[in-house]
Image (cartoon, rainbow over all chains, first blue to last red; front, side, top):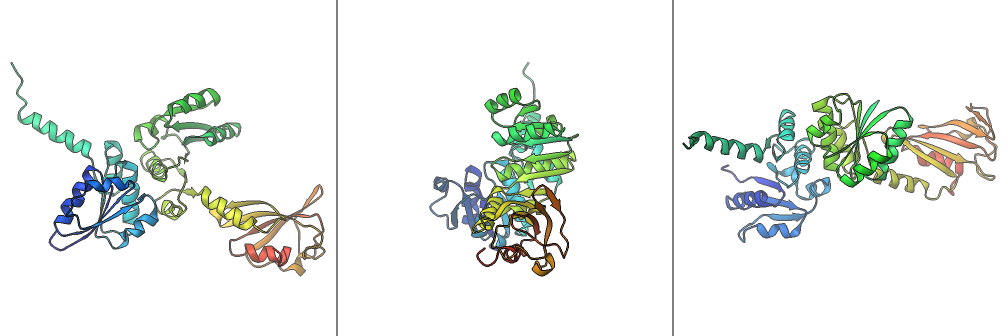
Length: 142
Length: 221
């Protein structure tokens, strides 16, 4: 990511705030949306982006975030269904070129990946990482 | 017809009862355990306690054989995902969703929900249309609001009373479908005259609604 991007992040929880801090520090323009104003406490003092309080499921809130101009949308709210809906609205209505959604439920993640939504499933990733560790150091005790 | 209803509240109970009385087989999916227990006692329908947007729950509700899914939770995101999964994963041919934010009506249609309806939108339209029209006794939006069926009672003194349909010249996009006169119902033609006490069943498009009402009721309307 050499040139500066305009990135909209939905959800300012642990993952959302981590991404917002990191991407802002790399010099990208960032807008973070969260329902709870207190969620923004997780942002660094150096965070130079915008904070928007609102429900991202409302199209009006996404318009306020200028999603129509975004290069990238990261849907990482707590609820899977919020992320799936926001990601599709971003892709189909606001024509955002790159969209990613976090989906914790592996069954839902699999389905939406097949429908053409780019998804990340922390449950599957953690499971694979743990199993891989097991595979490497999996010698049984005698 | 097997219909999966996803949601809570009394409306689910009344819908399920209505569907059963019409010979359909509803399956209810609700997140609230206490409500599920109550519903299972009240309605002769399969009641599942769970998240209707979780694929295994949909499958357990019989989504593979269902002919329609109706998602009416107060949360748009849950309604959308439930409808999409039912249609795409389980091949349910018809999906209907309640849209709480009227802005999302168009979004839902674009994202593949067959029928999206917004009670906010319907109520706002009803109130707007009814305001100032005491003669309009009933209104029903059809085809997602593209056609409205209205019932208008003609009292003495209104411009339409005593005139024939030909003289009235209702605006394009509107139609007097039938006239209820006492016990009889007639489908009026050009030369038929309207009388005091008639109840007219009128079809209008959103654009022709106001001109049609003015034509019948005069400028006071």
